[in-house]
Image (cartoon, rainbow, N blue to C red; front, top):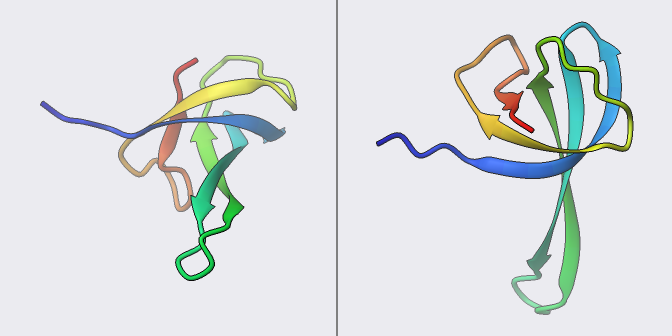
Length: 76
């Protein structure tokens, strides 16, 4: 069975055709000082037909490379 990563994030840009930029935020512990720090990643996700607004919470799933930067697709 193929296990694909599923991430939850916020839409920060919807200006492209069939593509949205999703900001995924997580907390990680610093290796030396052990303080919790915020880490953020911007993922380009394929959004076929759905109308997503900036600020909406979405779930994205890993998929095959769709273009140079798109490796995710919106599932919810």
